[in-house]
Image (cartoon, rainbow over all chains, first blue to last red):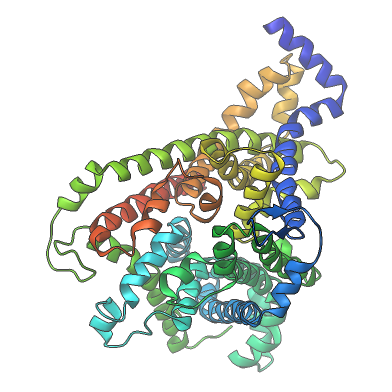
Length: 286
Length: 259
């Protein structure tokens, strides 16, 4: 065994590419073959058709699925609604995340900062399904806790979707902004206030421009995760539908080509979004 | 920046309120799992649902499905994530950024895209039946990133000359890994493994598209039963179990990697 291991070692020592192949071969094969291969399969499937008599997938390629997405009014409205929800959730999250991130980075004592950072990170690992389910018990228009304690509840529907999605992704928004603010030197804030800038002017003129990559990084998560969601929508959305629900429903009735075509929509939006924000350096802030 | 006392207090108050809101739903489900009434309004304390849930055949199947899937996915992710991080750390090669990107992609894209893509890949390209194997392959794919990130972060903080010293003293590649690199990476590996387990254990979207009909997991049990009033107490117990088995490993991992 040891003689063999020595011989293999010596072979490796001479050839760096052999070492590299040994290390990278398996993970790359897995990610490229399994994952990227699957994404390509998804793209290809989106051009297939469903035979409306036999309900089997026909491998004729064409744009008919994408045409259906554009032609059918319901689908257009669902896509637009999904986009607006994702934008709304992102705005809510950035607005709530900023003060907390600012408190963490610039105001809190080191001890409070450590505890608070852990307290904000931990819920990220808590099951997203359980959190959405827990909100259902809060929002229930009949016996829910909000109605019981505060007397009001938005009930199930579009406002509930935005509220719960914003809740779910909030830690994803706080962490990059916190990291960005930590890198922002205090001296810049002090210089601004020495030059007579009030808090508002400092915020607009100094903090936001320097923090832009971090804000965009935060928005990637809130935006992307909202675009594809269907579980939360199903649990607290009442009858409201988003792109994810349409994909899931079509998948359920075996219209995989149409489901695949609709799944390409969030994928394309994300690719365009990532390309747009890449120039700001946001991707290094993830 | 000179913030007034009021502004500082306001920021502290907002942060406090948000932390309370972050945890309130989780604690409410915990409370409901001990609720004597079959309702979402707390009426009194009982532990009977906990006993009943773990005697329930469907819950036990789902628990074992979840544990087996998470354990298997963790093992695969540990191996692949460690190999990829060693490669990215040691060598600068063409397409190094592509590797980092490919590792992150499965969790950066919406879960439904990853799920439906893997479903298409398994069934149409590979011609596989959905089942335990496809579920593990799918989970491992999005778990690689946490191992990769943890191990890479550790490697970047290690002094490189330790491995050189080991080689100078006559150790071969495998001995250096076994006696020098591996012990230094151990806590990062444990942390990465715990996070991979936590990530897999409560996953629901990719699971829906890759598990097939024969395997069920605890999140699938919740999704299938949350709207049935009769199952409500059992769903609460399962929900708390899922929370505990994802938050505790993540908390342990955080303790392990904290400086």
